[in-house]
Structures are given as C-alpha cells and as structure tokens.
Length: 391
Image 1 (tube, rainbow, N blue to C red):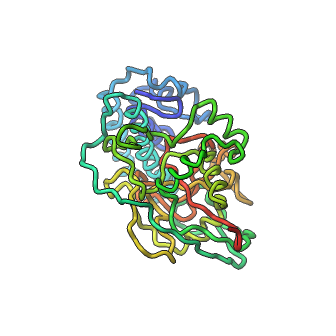
Image 2: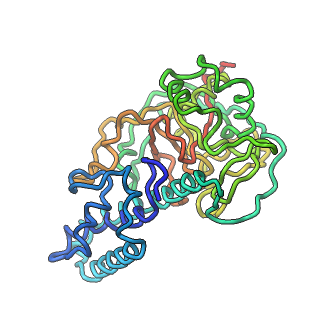
Image 3: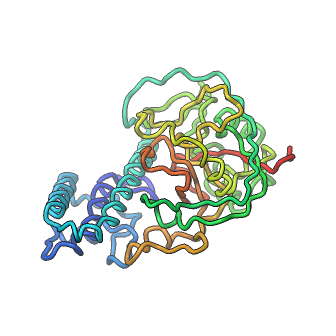
C-alpha cells in the first residue's frame, strides 16, 4: 500500500534496492547477463532517467503485480547473480566495480530507513491504529529537560568529507568556510517546549512564519506536528510501537522546516547553518538512539550535563537553515549515477545527524540529508542556534 505520493510501498523498496545492483552492476559487468524479468526495469526504477522509463511514483501503490512473493524471488535471483559475480570476477577487475557495490549497500541502508518512515505514515492513516511492533510504552519524563547554549568560535574551519572511506558525492569536497562565532543549543527541542509554542498561538501567528510556510499551514490545516492528536487524556502521538501519550521530555519529531523555522523565531533564536552544525558535531562521538537500539522513536535523554552537546546523532534529523546546494568544486558520481544526489539541488533544505530509524553505520558528521521544506513524514526535529549576545 502507498499512503501518499512521497511514500512508497514496502514491496517497491524491496524490489528497487535489488534493481539498483541489477542495473548499475550486473547488466554492465557480467557478459551475457539475463535479467529475471525485463519488465522490472520499468517498475523498480525510481528517478534515473538515464536508466530508462519508469512507473510514476504516485502510482506505485496501484501495482498488485509483481506480488510480494514475486519480489522476494527477484531479490533472491539478483543475490545469486551477485554471489556468482563475486566468485568469478578477477581481482584485477574488482576495483573498477567496488565503488558501485559500496554505493549500492549505502543506498540499501537509506531504503531501510525509508521503509520504516513510509510504514509509519501508512499505519497512521488507519483508524484501527496498527503498530509495526507491539511493546508497552516506557515511563515518560514529567517535564522537558534543561538545556544551555554552547559557544563556538571557529578559526578558518573546513567542512565536508576528505577521507578515503565512502561518502556521498554531495559531502565532497572538503572546503574552507567562513563561519562567525555562534552558539548552539545543547539539546534538540523537546516536545514539551514545542507544546508551549503551540499554547502561545504559534500556529495562528503569521508574523512567526515564512510566507510559503504560512500558505502550507493554512492549506493543510496544521495545528500540531504530524501524528499528534489531542484527546481526553491530552496529547497522544502515533509511533511505530502504537499510539502513546506524549512524553514532554523527548525530542519533538515530524515537523517541517517551516514549523522548525517558526518555532525558532518564537524562541528568539534561529536554526543553525549546516556548516555550524557540522563544526559543532565533528568533535562528538557518533553514538545515540539509532535503528539498532530497537526503540524506533526519539528518546528522552536524562543526562544532566548542560555544558555538552547531547543527542547530536540519532533520535531526529535536525533541520538546518541551509538550502541544499553543491559545495564549491562539487563533482557528481559518474555516468547515470550522477542523478543520485545532484539533480535535487534546488528547493530543498539540509538536515543533519540521523534519526532513531537510521542505521548507525550510515551516519557521519558530514552527512547531508535533504527534503522539501514542507516534508513532515520523516523523523525530523529541531536544534536551535543563535548569534552570541542575542537574547
């Protein structure tokens, strides 16, 4: 099933990730390779125009065929072909294909995350409130945690990836940036803090909103983050583990860039630039609430340290104030893979840090996620920044 045009059925994700290896490696590297089904090239292509025609994304949910069994069978056949490739390719030729293989693995990690975000959106439309996994809710905190401002005064900083290990093309090249002294909040914005914004009329005050954001808010009827619902018990929210009472201490989640920006104005602050976020995060250990924790939901952090940056990685993708644009000297991936990231460098905003459904090994301080500013179905949250001395 498909709940909206931006989401995809799980079956399609399963087929598409195998299609990637078929299209960009097996068809090109294996002489005489015979595809399991030529029609799948049309069905499981996403947006690679150089790879051929494709089924329209908003209509993926209408495809009752191939069945789920057919899709798993397709995956097994591609897996067998990949295994045969590994066992037969001479070591002298492996290097020329290693990049595509590694990119395909990172591509599959991205779709592991997308499967969970898309399933959550799908289940949230169902009045029977199904859950991805049934677990009792843990004890909630009684109030939002305290936060503080952490000052940074970078001296001729550089951002971007330069190591030999894998990174996406949009993370390169490493380059020098001018960044004035700034302060960044020690924690992401909590649900309790965001609720105060709502109680203060945050969704009905146009002076807090960007013009485009206000138009979307009116058109879509936004009055709370996605999945929040008010009832007799107070605010509840849909999670992958079922509907639960709002925990005011956990990071607010499923807000758009427009909502994040409006909240920052209300709080007398701003969203961090992506280079500010990266400079602050680069000294932090990559540890946190990722997919491997099994929580599948942002978690409250009871850490009492107010002088350190907390939850920079995991829990929620954090909106930045930066438009998604190429770095100076940017070079896209070669050939048809040039469409992987570069074609989206218009109209989107950058998010950083990963979320509670991101595989931990997938995240780096330089990782640049990007979505349209009205997107809310991703696990997206807020961290505030400000100029020194502003109050």
